[in-house]
Image (cartoon, rainbow, N blue to C red; front, side):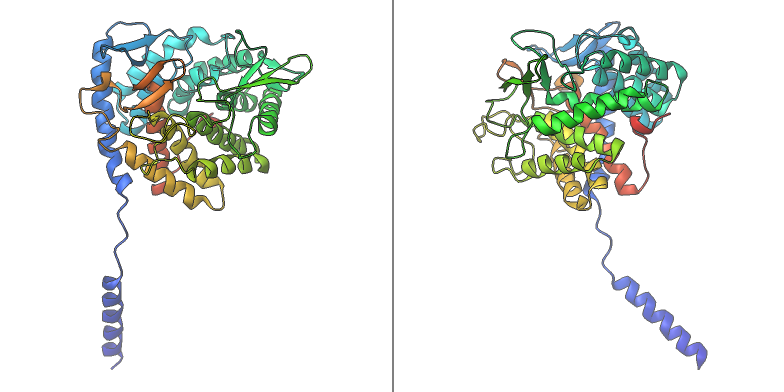
Length: 405
């Protein structure tokens, strides 16, 4: 009798288990292999066309050929970063070799002080190298780069000056938040401890002075470097000083999320969430969640999108989802954005797009520059977002520059 009862119980459990709904498949997770396969194909083709060109890809020219830039250009670090992502995903020594070759093209700017974007230039190249292939030479380049960036700090303002050219007096742009990770890393890895103070000061002042009452970020705030007074707000790459430039909002979400990771200061998390919520709920956000180039732009089919803004935002939101208590809504939104970017509407057909991965990005519409084109940094943040998402979905943490040693 006992055996009969046990058998009946076992059968009941088995029947119950078979009646449970199957775990829903993760469509994005299933698409990641094909996206990276496409990326590998695209970048292999681009590398062949580049040949011995000593510069680094940024976008395409009107004739479809690749436009390359010198190491001093703010976008120079993204191409080697993309090659490192391909190595991170595939583990192929060939991608590592290519990534290292292009990374070393930037060694000469380790003391560069010409503008604030050293974090982009060296963090995405040498920082990726350090994450995936730790070597002392990479650490030293990054420490040198952080020391050079710190020379742009204006103590009277508590901020890092972005540019040195007119008509600005002492401009600070929201993009600058992205360069603070280089300082926080260096402060923990042999650089001057003051670098963390500089990064925190810049984030504090940006948090206090760089945002509209609705929670959106200005692009440029121009200061008087002697008095600290704000001379003017500027739209620059945005449509109007009163409207939210899409990629600027993405920089803000990303920058304050990473600074919360570094400091655990609650106001940084609150700021990241405020900007994210503003973007996610904006009435002009298209249904595919890839924004128009400016949230204030006319919402119609002829208005340029900015895939780069969606890619930066998605990558930031994946990380924010792991920091915020209500993180699921941010992860769900990022998943939707990444599914859109992975679709034929934005993912380049094989052999097209100059070898870049994403289409339909907008660099500087008011300047009539890089409109509806591929941009190397769109690819960078798209691939980073996919790798971050995979890590979250599979519960396998990946290393960020902040905790690379």
